[in-house]
Amino acid sequence: MSMRVQVPLFVLMLVALAACDRPAEPQAPPAPLSRWSAIVTGAGTALAYAPESPSAQTPPVRLSCARDPAVFQVAVDMIIPIASEDRLSVGFDGAPFALAVTPRSLEAPEGIEAAGPITQDLLVMLQTARVIQGSYGATQFGPYDAPPPALLAKFAQGCRAAGVSR
Image 1 (cartoon, rainbow, N blue to C red):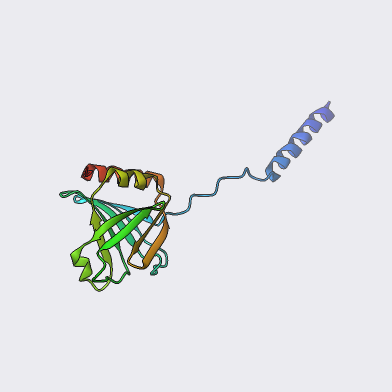
Image 2 (cartoon, rainbow, N blue to C red):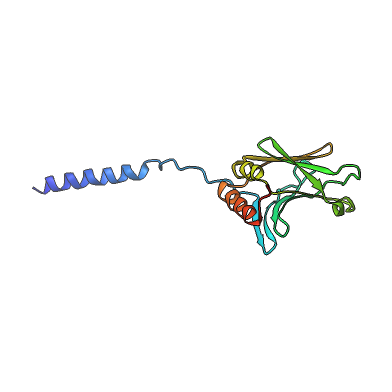
C-alpha cells in the first residue's frame, strides 16, 4: 500500500520539475523608448524631440500649437538661417506643410522657427503620422519616428483647443 502512495508522489515530483525546466512563454518585446516628450503651458501645447546624438540630419525639433493667436509652430535647432529663405516645410508621412520662417529667427546665429495656421488637414495628418521630416532650403532634417499614438492624439487635441483655422 505504501508503494502506491510513493509512486504517485514520485510522478508528481517529476512533473513539477519538468514544468520548471520549460522555457518561458515568449513575451512581446518592450516598446522602444520615445525621444518625444509633451510640454503643456498656459500658452499652448508642444512636442519636443531630443535625439540621443544631435546632428545636422537629426537636430532637436519642437512642434507646438499656441493660442491667442492660434498658430502651429516648428522650431529646429542646429540649422543656420539663410536671409533669402523664408519657408520651412514639415512633413507627416510625406505630406508637406509649408510654414513661414519668423523674422526673429532669421536674425539668430543658429536655429529656425516657422509658423502657420492650425488647419484640419494638418491635424488629420499629424494625428496619424508614422514619420516626421522637414526641409529648409537645401537642408533636410529627419526623418524622425513619430511620437507614440496616444501622445500624438493628446497633442492634436491641444492644437484643436488652441483653435483651427478655416
